[in-house]
Image (cartoon, rainbow, N blue to C red; front, side, top):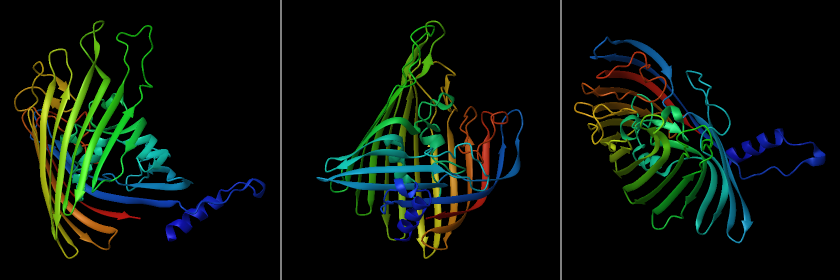
Length: 389
């Protein structure tokens, strides 16, 4: 109730002059979270030198503010909307803090589900979110995205076209109603960035589509997702180069009973090349034990060797050949100050194989490109605080 009254006050403060004023909505919810970490980072055991240990301050994700609401239209139909964006925390980063930079949409809801257009997480990314129930998260020093999804990106971002964890702009989305805990999602990203018909070889028409099915019942949660990228990348040499298709599927599940939480996931990423698809299998297992206000956490992630393409093919952090995988160990402890506030500490180690190139995602955790080398092991320990509202 307090959130609704606050939202109404915010809207009223910016209302038009009285002659043009409208009734302020009373069904707006304000929500968000702040997460700040102080960490110590080091990279070593790689040919060519180490990345000397240093202290950083930043946020691993989940630092946001959002506004959502709906309006009843009658006949079982509702308008639904949301505006969500990042906010600076700790490191004061502001490059992606513009309005609507996170999940933002406008659509309709009825008895057959929700249809909305905007900027929204892909169904595959939401499936991995089933494992995002501990403080480890998707990005940052403990994140699952570098191994399970080969990175994190937005839309058809050319700088990170290989990542499958994506917040997809220019997208049309569908979410079914919940049937006995079961829900289906689908998403299509329009090819608005199609290249010109003249002077470009090849002509590219980047688009994305994805689907997922999730189920929740009793102590169990499970999901499976599939995502396909068309023309995000090219393969071959100019002028015979061509657009290629990339795809990934992901399975995720968790079990939570009493003080115990156990979770696991598996993904397979595949990238088109002129000499065959480059593929990698990834998996994770993790768990949490709660004792009063205390949370004890552990997680292990594994990225296999890349296979199926010409030797030494590199796409994102997937490399064809032997000794190109990575392992990541994570240990954590949290203390709940309240239902919405936690302080925590952690230790993580990214252990790359001799030719592995898996780096962290998240600005305060990753080793800079000029300093990161194949085979580098990254050790991070730190403390943090998280609050949701």
